[in-house]
Amino acid sequence: MLWNKLFVLILRIHQDMRINRYLPFALLYFFFNSLGLPFGLTYMALLTPFFYWWITNTRAKEVLLPFVVCIFPVVFIQMVFVGVDDKSYLTSLLNLLAVYIFCQAFYTYLKSCTDQESIFKKILILNFILCLVAIPFYFTSYSNFFWDSQPLTEGVNDFKRLRLFTYEPSYYATLFVPFFFFFLLKIILKQNRTNSWLLLLMIFIPYMLSFSFGVVTAIALSVLFVLGFYLQRLVVKRRVVNLALLSTAFIVSAIVFIILAFPSNTMLLRIENIMSGHDSSGKGRTYEAFFLAMKILALKSQLWGIGLGQIKVIGTDIIKDFYLYPVDYKTVAIPNATAETLALFGFVGLFFRFAIEIFLFVHTQVWKNYYRLLLFIFMFIYQFSGSFITNLAEYVIWILAFTNVFKQFDVLQKEQFVLPLCE
Image 1 (tube, rainbow, N blue to C red):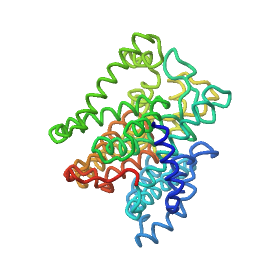
Image 2: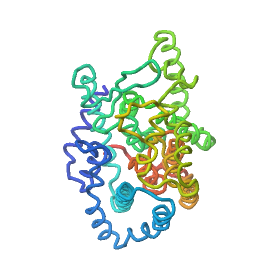
Image 3: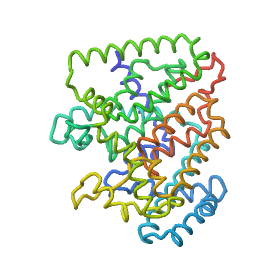
């Protein structure tokens, strides 16, 4: 009776609409952040002045000055000694500033809001409803409302993947990561009162429909690492063992069935292409991204990089020639956050990227919380196979990993502690 359970949850949300003042911003960020806007522009960026005002009033602390102090030496070196196109550089710097203010706003929200789980529940259910609404559109001429049709791998040139109202399926899949881990842990640690099968359906459907191999692979590796790292502590939990055995049996059975019944299906074809090195998307987001970053970096300073916004200025020809893009092709980028950091900020920037991640991992003791550890490992892996340096979804994951908000997932949490999913 999963549908009855879902209906009851929807009714409870409707009845509990004592509007959380943060909920509209959460819905805007998750569902509509780039809807109807030119590529690269988001509503979170447009709200930057409001966020800055709210942060300074809420925390009574100046947050912009530290950013300016830290970024000024890099800006000075790149503009004076490396040489950049001023207009594109300053535009990208302004965009980076907007991302920083959003990150400060999100951190302030985590520290100020006492009802994050309620917002998580509402987004989960609304997302699931939209997924169900999107499925019929797949078979119509209006599929582009929710689905992105694009080349997937060699031999598959027109494949539909769910993106909802975001600009790209992989971005949508990354957006959903904090919710996936949150409710998965609810099930594993027996903290949910919602039907577990319904909850599993609600968190797995987005990944089945978005078909994002990079995100799913990083999620799987994160779960395996945490299970292995805390094996002795988790293996004594009956639900963990049962779920592990059930998941293994289901995955093995599904793989065998797919191989025997559908030997030429898209998933197997892409796995085969990835293993043989013929998957253009996988190559473009991994080692080719680093190859192109190094070629572009060689045009300027390997130590300090080429500067913000300069990939489109000096890297366009290199990228177009490498992929044999037509002359009028406009979307030129390095779809890998680590490789993009290397290109824009050189080896100095790459060093500080990893230094900050490792420092915050140790300083905030990420390993003491299952949820934070899952998020950290996911993002640490995924930064080598996707994302970009102004990706809000990435920074939300990093901030959640370094901020101990959901203490019910602490490793040393008492066994009898139960926090209901739905009240």
